[in-house]
Length: 325
Image (cartoon, rainbow, N blue to C red; front, side, top):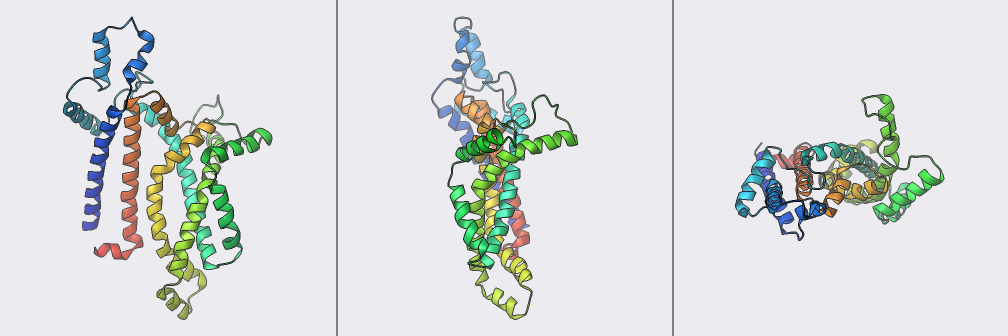
């Protein structure tokens, strides 16, 4: 229990630090987002109205500490302000509408890559020089060396345009009404295959090599030799003894990788015109939409911290040594 409370305290401090940095960075950026938003209204808007807009978006001339206090209070009450580029839509509504698609795309690709990569890494390390160990690492490293957008564009051209096996883009067929039905779910999965596969193809090699290297070191430990001396089955030794201990670095990497889901999915979302928070972040940066940028960054930070806290809880189960700290 003490370990959990200690980790929770560190994540609370990290969240407060991220809030502070998230507040300061957009205000240090050059440019005038309000002026850009109202550029088409020059001559029709008064200075008083312009000052009201600046106050509305928290970009007025108030002391920085007053803006900071209001920002902290609004963040903890779920009020992330109004989007400048999509005025007057609340930021929380934009994030809520888009984040589900990013979680579906990035989360599905991450789970498949982690599970498949770890299994391949375990099998490759347990039989060095075998087919899996000889063929998969160089092939996956070669595929993973390509940028996300290049692989996505190549897959889109080959499988969607030339062969016509998959749709050109979007999360579901245009004109189809979203609903909790098997028809809509099947259509979403059909549109998900190609973009998710490109992310899996790029990241799979890293997961496999990481598990393979850790597994090789673990297989040389004395307790593995002892398990063999006891006459235990190879399958039990491989998964119950070696893989369980070799899995710990992958668990840590999984928690950290959740934060990079958006980074990897951003370019994929652009290529496939897939709706998501990554593409919204790109549009927000281009439009200098400070409130939307802050809201997205805050959402990503909170997601990473929560994911890593859950990983720490899982560590209690996987590694008994953590419980005695």
